Image (cartoon, rainbow, N blue to C red; front, top):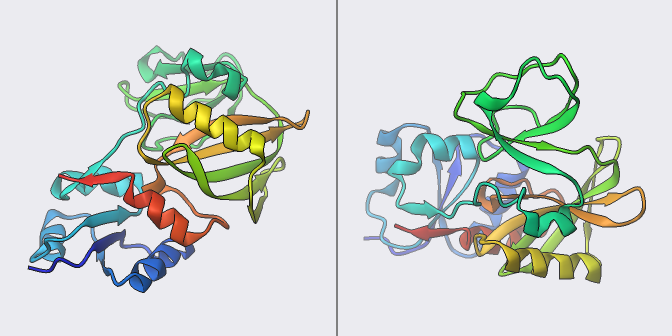
Length: 244
């Protein structure tokens, strides 16, 4: 049996997974790329007895997660819309079941999926529609203008690496940064108010008044790195999962 830690990666190659792959290799880990079939998973895991972790995307974990010896610690549905987080989100957010949304839409709003991304996360105008299963849940959010978005990889409430990744025009503009004390304190408080994975991604944005607000939380094992430190990102990914 091989007790060396194993990093599993999705079968597509991109800048982010290559950065995580390089970091795992530098630590002496083994790595394997997975196809979305049970037989491939079993073949890649044969003879493995050490720690196993995954970095890829939510669609793949939905397809083959049951065959992996990994517990993916979930981000609890409804956290973002919790009244406890309103002082940090600073906007109205509702979690709505798809079957309760009137289509075509009658009012403008920012919509995003809860969990696996089935729809494009964006502002939808009256008259537009989207296709989801009736049992899917969506966040409907008040529209807030901003100048920058920030991605933070967080361990136990502390930001370990962060990067600006998009400006208010929707253009990607990545820059590794040390967040302000304000954002660091917001992160600690948000982490303490709800249940989160030990390793998680928090996204923030800077509004037109120059104040940061909490955008959303994402699974670190399925999040883009932008200009964050891959070593700190892998540390966060490790703590987003446990062995079954």
